[in-house]
Amino acid sequence: IAWSTEVEFDHSLLLWHITTDLCYYSDVTANSNCAELENCQISKLLSNYMLYILVMCPFMLPNGIGQIRFEDTCAEAREVLQERKYISDRDQVLEVILRVKTDVLPSEVKGDRSKSVLFDARRLAKSIESLEREKKWSKEEKWEMMSHVWVEMLCHAASQCRGFHHAKQLSRGGELLTHVWFLMAHLGITEQF
Image (tube, rainbow, N blue to C red; front, side, top):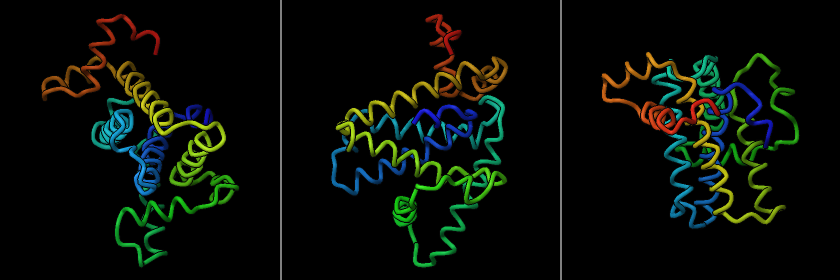
């Protein structure tokens, strides 16, 4: 799964957000207790929060083409829905995405013009699922790893955001990202990111 972090930050954020949703859906439909696991809940909350930042406050994230990736991914999801008119809810969309074969890289099928990460996320989710099967990871271990990814993304985003933007957000009540930045600065760990 190292390839998922060797891309631009906004790409990785969107990729891990969709992957988190796919893994969560897979675990919940398999009747596992993942929704009760603390790291699962943390992962879902941070995933949703970071997507909110990407869409609503992109100026707080490192420079990139996050809006374009988000729009291309939404467009590709709409195409999936239009091709399958019987799909009426989110769970059915996730089910269709989970059935996608990942033997061929999406870039080989679509080329490099599309910035969508929808099917790359399926590939990443499949890699994470293989950790459970092949490495005998428990659900707790899987969600602990995923929560670590989200905490690292949160800290990286907080440290990369300019102080001006943090101050601007404080005048509106603040963002979690800003509070993380202050905590990191207080502890002297901003340089590590």
